[in-house]
View 1 (cartoon, helix red, strand yellow):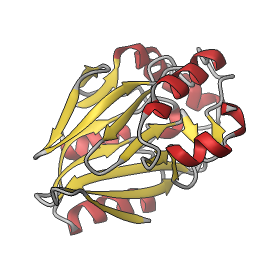
View 2 (cartoon, one colour):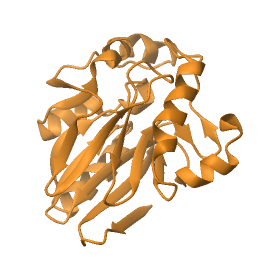
View 3 (spheres, helix red, strand yellow):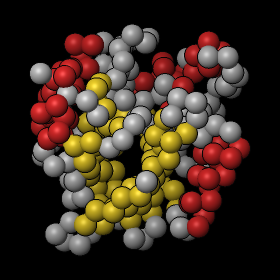
Length: 223
């Protein structure tokens, strides 16, 4: 699905989503009219998915500035090495998530497939920092709980947040995986994500988009 948002200042970010791999993980590209882009959570697995992703980038003449990770669970990084090798840009990840990334080969083995350890340039990000796409800024929010270094990417001007696996439509991320913490996740959602404007569009790591207002009213985990 393809979404376009326009702010009062007529600055625009475009959001393109892809549902990839057996986990139906949402990979995102956000880009501006100058064709600068961030690739978020590359989960492309078979060759056909990789071609779909690459074809969209080439057809729209996008320049990938960075690869962003909301977190490093295996379903969100299956295409990470391909993305790094193809676009030769740093991978941005929270430092608290490095253990999860380092465990990826072990995790993949448990799911029955081979995944080599990632090799490439990594830069650490943290809450309070802002990433720039032209005149647009993407703010980083720490939302641990689903994993220790989970982050969300928020763009105020266009009213959307990429939430990773913290918040879903009428659900929340699982916390039974390595270093998951239910109480921490609920705190992250209530004290970070739910403080955003209610009309903020939420793009989750799985499933359909939702909004902060809808989740405040309908999400059974947040009552």
